[in-house]
Length: 513
Image 1 (cartoon, helix red, strand yellow):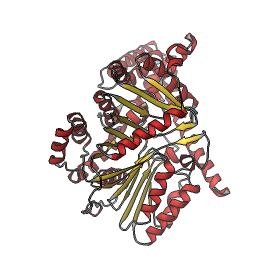
Image 2 (spheres, rainbow, N blue to C red):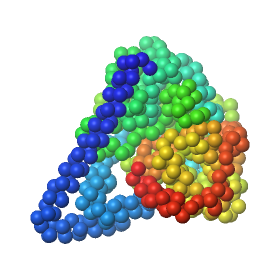
Image 3 (cartoon, helix red, strand yellow):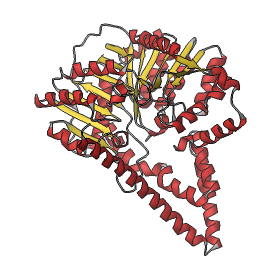
Image 4 (cartoon, one colour):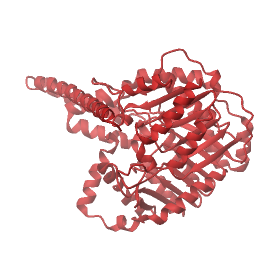
């Protein structure tokens, strides 16, 4: 990156710091006002305590995960003024009401473009009722149909997926949609930018979305103007401003590329050099992705258009982006791309994982950069292991965030006591988000096994069954296990009492991080 680029990144990080300080000042001011009044009136102190109790009861009565409620309840009861103030600012659902209404309006317009072919579900029901139920859930509660007539290619390294993307982008004729959590203006993005600007100059409709927090350490807001000069339409999701932003906790963590509505890419990797092992900040970076071609790409198109039209308040056109296709798939199988939103009460990402675990008969393997899970998922993994299923989880050997790494390890003890096997990827940091079960079904996408992905972020994934790519995902796990250190026995018996206490404290506040 040139000198000017480095200055821009410093300015961008400074904007994030300034925004954080501004929020802290506003919280401190609220606390000061209440505490000032407390000094003069015992009545106000009683009212504050009663308000804290009522707020705690309200949280307790909500239909949400207990692990998400408990930290708020303890914080409010231990520190009534600070706890109630923080909850009023960022904790309750009303802070996202306006954003939720915008998404609902756009979703209503996109519903007609997602129609389930009943014959596909009938055929799947005959082949595998358990997987059919999973797909029926995704169709009924996330709104995304399951398709045949789609070929899936799995990439066991991010650079392989990126090379395939560049090749397909150069063939684009009508439109290119890209939505990514993090973009870094460096070597990898330079190749991408060249391909996108060339296609834009040829008249292709090129659009890009990035998340502000995800990219804040890499690019500046001037990035949008520079992309626009190249003919690339660019939007930033949920910009961090130096004022209180109540929606700042919900980020766009999706990774999507759609080319002409016919070819789609998704997976764990962002558009930054470390993901392709050009740089090595945390040892060797392990990431994966998939390429889809055929009918199932329609779901990715809808997911992108949802986010684009929530951000963009201009005129909305949908029909040109759902072309008829005469594509004939080479392979067989069922493919179901899906998305998850923190603005509804349906925890799609978590429920897909839970259903895979419930249906597992012989084995279920997970790879995730973070392991911060709910009691429900913990219990399902333990139950699967106790009924004889080989349950394994791969996590990083070198952390990118030490506090989150320690929190991840705090979950090992209970899991291994229940029969789950834990492996740490010793060459470096594994960022892939994937699972495979029984040589039948697999998922690849952006959804980590942590509270942020499962409860707070906009995410996407792809479920596929009966495809050759399922075997490729399984083969990837088989290649990775030998370069991992299995720490199962270590965490079954090797933790001191002090370490266990510290890990309990970390886990208590995991949902708030």
